[in-house]
Image (cartoon, rainbow, N blue to C red; front, side, top):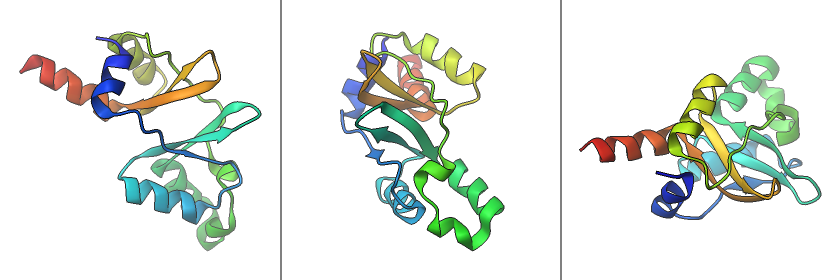
Length: 131
């Protein structure tokens, strides 16, 4: 099975946010969409980062109430690991486990975001294949 197969099953909608977005808005987006991470996208560079629930929790521990005045760019993970839609699911899972990450943006031509897969997406698909 390929990553593109998972994207077809889960739908093509991609949650993205701009680097200058405030943390409150990012947290609201995560909560409303019931997702664990959002791709931070800048039109000039493509994927600029990723911000997760964990980033926000760690930011709260570090900054306290001041966190709400921070921007996504202040907390996001900058070194984003991505994959291609033609990757095998086992290859994506290996990269996620090796790098201790739970979300993997899917890109085409090293720039255009076409989706995001999570550890939950891969686990759900694996469980379905076993059944």
